Image (cartoon, rainbow, N blue to C red):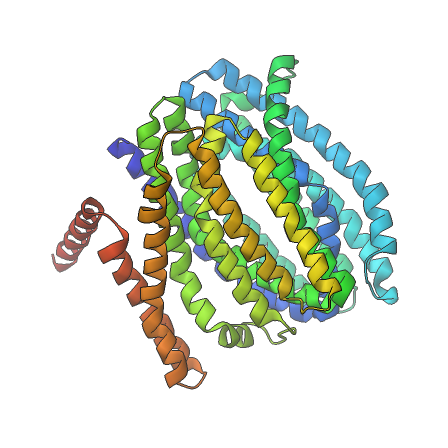
Amino acid sequence: MEASDNKRIAKNTAMLYFRMMFTMGISLYTSRVVLNALGVVDFGVYNVVGGVVTMFTFLNSAMGASTSRFLIFELGKKDYIQLKKVFNVSLSSHIAIAIIVLILSETIGLWFLSHKLVIPENRMAAVQWVYQFSILSAMVSLIQVPFNAAIIAHEKMNVYAYVSIAEVTLKLFIVFILVMGGFDKLKVYGILVFIVSLIISLIYFFYSKKKFEECSIEFHWDKPLYKKLFSFSIWDLYGGFAIMGMGQGLNILLNMFFGPVVNAARGIAFQVQGAITGFGGNFMTAVKPQIIKLYAENNVVEMMKLVFSSSKYSLYLTYFISLPMLLETSFVLEHWLKIVPDYTVSFCRLVLINNLIWSMRGPIVTSFHAVGQIKVANLVCGSLFYLIIILSYICLKMGLAPQSVFIVTIIVSIMVQITELLLLKRLITYSVIAYVKYVVLLCVLIMVVSAVLPYIFTFLLPQGFTRFLIVGVLSVITVTTSVYYWGIDKDSRNLVSQKILAYTQKIRK
């Protein structure tokens, strides 16, 4: 990779981290207020009702990945005529998907909502409002995807960051409205979330249309291209549907066996996960275009070097914030939320552990997309993900605790990780043993070594702010030190040292 590419990744990552720190702070605050304003039952109801609609947007994740891949690939090849065709074919496809989601949601989804979910009878009228506006929000988000993908493909991460900041700011206004009285807060919350989704989609639409030539809307009937996009998407759809089942399917299972209070606990756990995922996810958003562009340029050796390094860095960034959260989950939740639903602490810890496993998957999955050979990977790994629903149902039917579904998820995630490494070997020449040695084992070493000292202090001190502060500071020091001395290569270490030295000398002047 050229130095300019590294600088671009660093700049885009920095911008996305600025976005994440702002949005994470606002999101954590708003989720606490929303929980208290709605109450545990309504909060749980909103999560599970939104999940029913989300089930039907699995088409979106598949088509979104396909759109992103082909836009980035054509940009890498600098074929701007084909780039415009890809965008317009993708847009018309997403409009069609939005219509399909509407039909499925108003038929199968509405029946499932009315007859299968555990919802207090006195809240059914409000739930119907929330459900309808959740459908509208999902449709708007679906149509927005090609515009969002164009921004990321062009690596305009500053725009992506600013729009995300605008989105959480608008959601903060929702919180201020909710704390007022005199209305059904669940209904109003559903309506306002839709309005925010619509505003954000319009911003993406007008910006992309103005800045990117390929985003001028024209109808293209290119049968081979439609076939190519859908062929690529159909296998992503298989894997995406399995991942959706892992998320929203488990949410519905928990509702059926334990009711909306457990859904509230899961909803909080996944909000924590969403905040922490950004530490590695933002890095991957910046790296993904470079991986695909390197393959488009037939530079496979450099591509795999980037895959190896980005897998490590993604985990380091995720673990940096996950370690103190794992050790001080109870303290954080008690001071973040006035109400901590049962199971929330254990759910959070298990979700964060699974998140660490997933943090290394991004570059591997992107490699499959870069090559364009995703059929076997999605068929095999998607089938493994389906096991999560089946095994979780068996566990719950046997009377096991709700935590069992998350333990099942962790075990299957490890199996998927191993399978993907072996399948990628069939497409690209690289050493699986080298990946295990220099990425997986190295990351495990970093995590174990850096966790020892902070973990000891959780036994030496009683729970409280003092222990939280000490454990947090020690976690930052031990993770940073471990990564610096063992987690990065000599060249990277020298570069970091030079940057620190230059920054120190600048301060002294």
